[in-house]
Length: 168
Image (cartoon, rainbow, N blue to C red; front, side, top):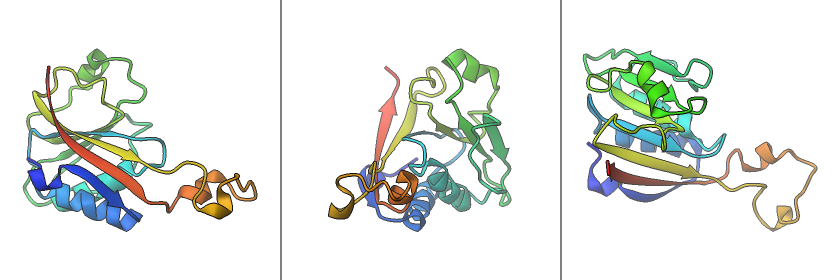
């Protein structure tokens, strides 16, 4: 269970800090916990999950599950496995149910799952990650097109908001 001190807003300046936040969260997770990650492409969802996985002591590597939909990482330390899933291409909670994820016996991290987790858990943690779009600072305010936008914000600070949610 994520402690109250980790709930709320976190300013995360670097990818290393995002992994460290994941480690802090992961240190409190146990079998049956569900973490739903929301944010645009490149926001840091998988980076946060790498930190969670490190704290849980599961086998890696931790990669985006976009093309496999769900990947199970067994524990290397006798704890719960991590199921890292991507609900982006799923159209409903019924399709998610078809994946037959062991929600009770695993820590489940669900990317893009905010509207697709109905019935999985009574309580879960909702993590929203936002990032600046289109560059930073006065030198890019008018859209310096000499660099790709991915370069402009790849190392930009993120804002992470962690909330405890309950089923309606």
